[in-house]
Image (tube, rainbow, N blue to C red):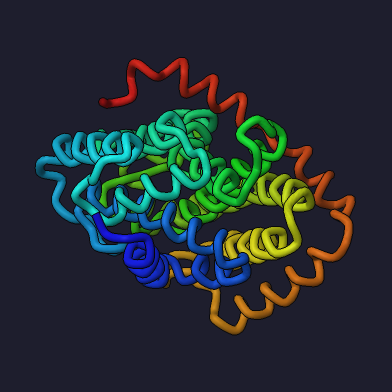
Length: 325
């Protein structure tokens, strides 16, 4: 197993390659927190890449042997929590950060269940299904990130808010990536939403449906906004530098959702990105917001949430026997 400094260096390279937005926000943390965030990110990124046969995202690879790759993710993650070499720096990084912060195997398994849904070519039927998926692949990651930042595993309300940040990120990503997902023969738009717009499954990105899909993207972005507001409320309970970083990340990813809304039917002509200049503006703006009380508008926006972490954990429990393992 590599030593800590080597694992941190590899994790730093991973986040710089895999998520420029998150890498920019992580620079605002104190050194210890920053390195632990990198270590956790490296595991998340590696799991995703193993399942989808990718290298830090991009075009989806072969689906051959995906069940075997999922089993490999589960086995290596279990080794990491057992304190044993996992044969992969990203999994060893998880074992290290778990030892330092108190992350649990149950937390990691909640995330892996989301990868399992992708491996099964699953599509949500309802909005609740969509949110359950977002819980697994992003909300549960938000909870792990909060623990890495020093939030107590028993601080339920703050963990709820951390989950909301992950949900907001994932909803924004899904809305941005309608076309990319369609090219990969995936769709995370609930079947009930498509039916409401008279869009046959599998035909959602045809030009004739572009206006309707823009309306569904805006609907998804409004969901993201409610959870972003909730996350901003929770950020007020963090230490100053952590609060700054979280508010910066919320602003950057929130801009993705707002830009998708603004572009309407043109949202998928090219990938929606946040420029480096705008990222710097959000970092500066977040610094000012970190010094001020949470505005009333955030509390009002957060009240529009329809699904809490407790709801989503319950939903996941109801479907635990149908999640591919």
